[in-house]
Image (cartoon, rainbow, N blue to C red; front, top):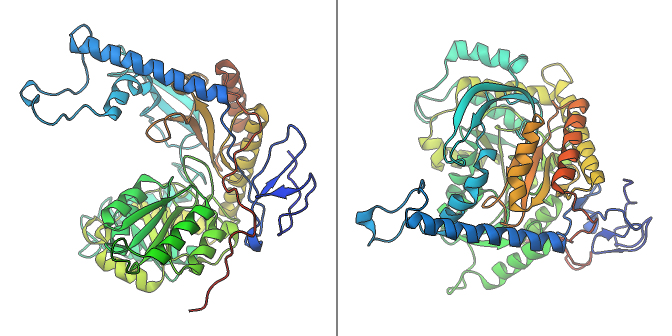
Length: 549
């Protein structure tokens, strides 16, 4: 599809007609792209698509869940009267008079809906999670309550589900050799925290390298990506502080915000009008009851949203942050390594200054093929976290071979290994992403997210099609991840593909051919080329001029 002509800053003009609210009107049958060039903040086109769910599909999805719910209550009735064997957790007889533990809706959902398609998740693999994987075959004789392994291994499944963005999850090559050498020298574990006897020279080397890679003064590494968010946010904000969080933020950010004790307010996903309204209200009204000013206002966003495939509107977020004198916490778990011409994440992607982001967080679990996370920023911030972060004070230090895997892969991306392999992988991922997304849209699927995001959600909607899509793809030797409630809204089930630089064009073409076939079989090609605007406002409604101190 031909990219629309870049619109002028005032929102007027274009090859296919007038612009309004950041949308280009194209000829009939062409996809409409959401393009933002607000105030010249964007140096490149920013195209994101969130197509409207067809009314018939939405109705049938609700009907499907309604039928499943009715049958669920019928089966619960049969279990209560011992007509059907009950295999789920239930109240003990002597606890009947206590507050019920198993009466909530999610347990009903797990028992009667999730269990029907449970075979689509937790499939065990027995190889490196590279471009292809080997998977252990399993069967269930009691409708997915239990599984039995057959002893057979399904070979060479094309892996479209792992977060192996740059292909560093491999068992051969310089990363593996370096990690093996460090394993023989340091061993597998450290058996202590960084503040005691667990601070190795390798940890110091990693943190200095990560700081240089990010372009910040200092950085600190942690052994677990999830805990990097959940344990550090409470160290940064507390009672009397305000957190403004995107409604689709990851569970680790949500947990960290809740543990902090700060007041939390949610803004609509990637909606700058919603965020600015909350910022204005926070400045004008202050804290509830007392009306005192907030001690801190912290904005929580992600680089790439892992269920939507969308990219944060970072130039606008930074502009608002500067205008209202707040702080910005950026989670680059999925974007670091996967975005930007040099793989430095969403800041690099937009050509921004890393100093404009107060807290740069990311993980080593995806693009670097390792484990753990990091926080980068001003030296004062990192020195503070070394003392007050629970992850720093109480968690065991990172394993030395894992640290070496990260060091070697980061040096490869930066070109400090003397090769251009890292830069080539970043470029290959970008090419794979655009090719795969374009082909799926041409086939007629509803695809969410930004055209440069390697996370590609394909909408399934109906509950029966969640399990059916996963099973049919596995029959064709394609490993995919299907996602449903509670990870997504209950009627927005989807398959999520993760592209990798390790995927060859032949692999992608094979996967696309099978996806096209399964899409016809399950009637998944819902696209009508109609998009829902995320941000319905004129270009000049919000201003971003910085105010004087």
